[in-house]
Every structure is written in C-alpha cells, then in structure tokens.
Image 1 (cartoon, rainbow, N blue to C red):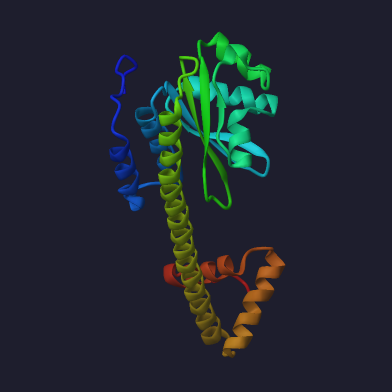
Image 2: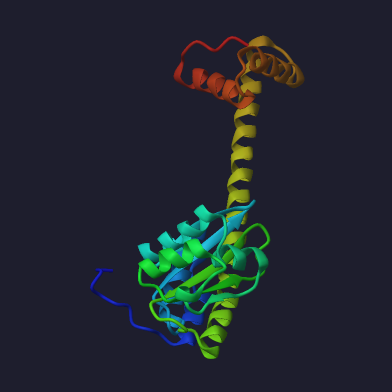
Length: 244
C-alpha cells in the first residue's frame, strides 16, 4: 500500500469473519500474523500502528507489523528487556499505557514513544497458544485513546485471532508431518531398491544386504539412505556401483 493511502476502518464483525475465512492452504503462520496486525489496525478504535510480538523461551521477536514505527517501538522493549508487549505476552493479560509522557514503568519505551509522537499503547495477549506466547500491540498517536469499547473490541479480536493462529499452527504441523512421512516412505523405497541390487549382485539375503549398507554408511560417515541412493543411481545410469 502506498504510504499516502490510509486503510479505511472496518466493522469488527467483518474483521472477525475475515479471520475465520483465511484459506490455510495458501497461508503460513507469518502471513496469518501479518493479516492479524493489518486487521487490528483497521478494527480497533484509536489504532495508529500495530505489531505482533512472539515470546518463545524468553526471547521476544516482532512477527508482523503494520508499519516501521510499531516494529521500532517493539525493538526498544526487546533491547531493554522489558515493556508492555513482552508483559502482555508472558502474563496473558492486557497491558495499557494511557499516556507515555506520564509513564514510569518502562522509561526506555516512554522516551522512544514520546520522541516518535506516540501517545499511548494497548498490548493484548492472543490466548490459548501452547508453544508460543503472543500479543497484539496497538500504538496510538493520541493519549488516553482506548476507551472501554476499544478495549472490549481488542479483547474480542484477540480471541478470534487465537483461533486463526491455532488453526494455522495445527495445519503447518500436520503438513510437516505428512511431508516427513512421505520422505520416510521415499527413503525406505530407495533402501529397498538398493538391497535388491546388492542381493542380485552378491547372491545374499535381504538381511545381509542391509548389513552391507549399514557397514558402508558407517565407514564413509554418510547416511544410509544416501548410500542406497548412490547405488540405485549407479545402476540406473550404468556407472560403476559404489563399493559396499
């Protein structure tokens, strides 16, 4: 989007519906989080810029943002080792800074935000995540920008985002498992082919052929499947077979 164009705000229900309709087969976790940041900017009253913080094993990163400003203010918190985005993700509770000029809990962030013309922020945890702690951070140019209604919308939005993130995480895990299973089947097929080659060449049993493959793997410090693939490739292209 060109910098001079401002996204129009949308109804909360429309944002919730869009999150629910995300086609997981066409998405990644990163792209889903980016969509969460963009939609939050458009749906939470008072939002200026939005980011998404991931906290894993004590390390915080910004997975998505609607603009450089939000990402920079996140980085200020990570460098300081403290801040509302990290606290919201870790504690699972909403954290608000109504006025950065009066903020004393996080002086590093307060100074950076005030210098950049940011008045306040609202960090909302995305609930229900097991492996990751996630928070949506909403920055506003105004002080005291988030009223009761804005906070309610932010909480509800976070709950819908939680479903989208959890579904994407499950989908990626399932896809990775399927790919690993397919790879394992392919490796097994190659090993069985190589065993057949050795059985034919050396007039040995299947068990003895596997022992030859294992011994060659140990001698050469190569994976057994790579040894097997080399044997099969040598037979297919007519080159000399690798020693086993």
